Image (cartoon, rainbow, N blue to C red):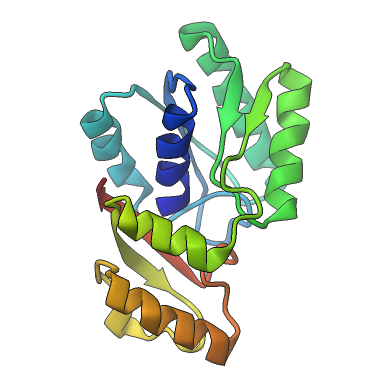
Length: 186
């Protein structure tokens, strides 16, 4: 989604080397830890960024099973690419942050989370101002109907989203699953 992709952009600008992309595919969209919709298309993002990708399927939506899958693929990334850390796009989810930190501590990896605790309005504006074209591929919150599906978000759309977020109380960044995004150009 937009958060992971934008984290790559920030990390590269901070001087980090992105050695590979990691995708853990959850069993269904019921995962509280992992992104689900259209994960198969991240292969195209990997190709366009010229960054190799490692993919693993989780056999369950159980968090412990997903963590086992993540650990397995991180070990593979350490062996194959010599990674020293995990970059993730978490913004507010303490649940995700704690899970990633726990596994990285176990594997002696650093955690890099450049979006952590960013202001939602500033972050969403920065995305658009830095040329990130992303569309909504899933909506599941009051205030977001199917007219948003497949829509590439513009500055005008952001103004509407801010208004709707304030009216209906959803997270503007969609980190709570209110919507899912897919980056089509950046």
